[in-house]
Image (cartoon, rainbow, N blue to C red):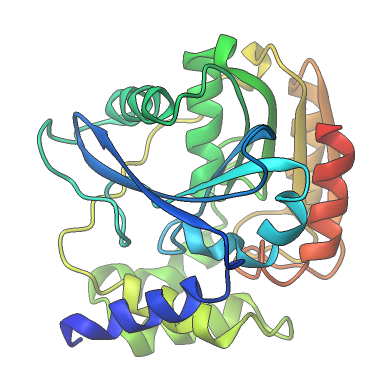
Length: 275
């Protein structure tokens, strides 16, 4: 991959965000973090964490509606492709990620926020909500992975080639398999595929968090056709383990086609839940 291919795709997707979107680079002990900020300055804060390789720009189809009411902060994850740098304190484990989010919220001036994550970002959102419950008003988990269930073996098998020998072609083939018939945005698909080849990525994984200990209201939105896990089984476990949980299926959605192929369904659910 030429160094500029990912950058070009990134800039192209950035152009899809509303014109008044601000780019903020927040200093943390782990490096500067890129946050795409949109919405009224006095709006209730809403922090969005993307899935792996998706970058914070993946919420472009949601931001215009969510930003009518909320001050949206879409984050490029630490250790992943994007504009967030990894410098200073080494990133070693999940505790570093929660410490990074503490520093990020401090830098953004957010004492409290609504928090929403997709996929790996949802796992991180749960970890953070358990770490600092006093800072999270409401929590939204969009097809969360490694939270209520592990990955399907068939999914891991399909993902393996892109993990062992990353290439744009392998990532595109994997994406096409998982998102069949949902037609995610072409620019985003290119960005995702190129992101898997960016050198030096370090995505931290960890054990399943104790969701029974979550003290705030939680909304779980599951992709009906997700190939990462069995949506019905995940829904059942979420209902059983969350003290204040709501669970809904997003019809026709697959794991990697979220959040961009069902923006209206997703936005409507989010707006209603967040009030």
